[in-house]
Length: 413
Ligand SMILES: Nc1nc2c(c(=O)[nH]1)N[C@H]1C(S)=C(S)[C@@H](COP(=O)(O)O)O[C@H]1N2
Ligand SMILES: [Mo]
Picture (cartoon, protein in one colour):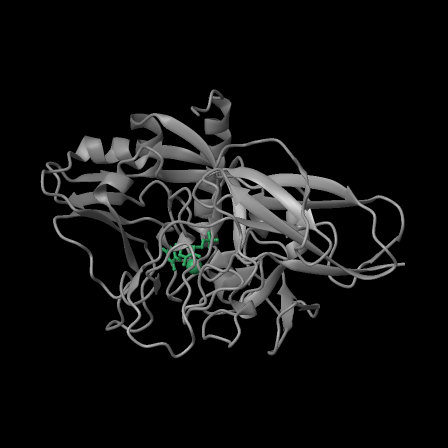
């Protein structure tokens, strides 16, 4: 897991300093008119057209879901390029619009405080120098990825399937940093806060917490690089939390405060925000149902997608056609991905691509021979714990944790 290449340090160091010196501010607010291109998302029963924009710094062509704060979705075709999501096409999600537009990596510090023996203040260069470096491939997925498919519709960013991405994260173990500060007996949770602020002072700043054992499991990281580059400002420059296998709401960007708590965090962003019906892995309830117990969202569940064909695509009938996609196991690896072309009555195996670790996207491929006409392809992932994607969609008011088997209907001609 430890990166062997010292030269990456020099490259990253230069990138970190350059990115800090860019003064991205004006660009964040307005960099000219938005591109005129529109994209149609496969969303049911609602506005399904979005603008494609190049207007955000360090970002390529992205689906504009919201401008302030920026919510930028990854166009789905990107996932067919490979298992690692290009940094400039990695989705973006913020809660509050008062985002620093200039971060100086020489002076920006993260404070490790609260229920510890010794408070620490560390820059990215302190992290690089003082702690052992680790690298891990992991999927970052928004809790509300695919929310736009919920029926009845629910409020929130109406994402299609592009609020997810996979990267090789480089940084240090949160455990090592906490050990350096010395967690005192009686610690219960560890709370994380970024550097942005709400637009009105009375609104609650985004703070998220993990149980202390989870925070110290040796997998949770403070990362300053993704896919060999420093983090774009909008993805949390100069460093962010990485919580492998857990929804991205915990992956605090532009990390500023790590506070060890001697009690459970009950702030708004832990409860009621980002809570699910207490029946993981379904996170399911009936619309309008009363007396449902809600708990903070946590581990991810398996998903899979066809990436080389989209609904409406024409494919030749009667001869083997390549079907390719990606899958991830959620909080563990992918055991298998199967494909059905008969509405889920029978399933055929697919070949899994290279394994980059249990938290990564995994590519899968197979060939199918399709009869003439409209044919529906369904991919289903089973993870290493035996958890399988369900055939019926879940529902909850947050629009969280969709993982139903998805369908792609092509026309065989
Ligand atoms: N500081 C900060 N970190 C944050 C958030 C935020 O609003 N502020 N949003 C969280 C949520 S809900 C998501 S989905 C991910 C998105 O990460 P990305 O923008 O790098 O894709 O960031 C998480 N970390
Ligand atoms: Mo999110």
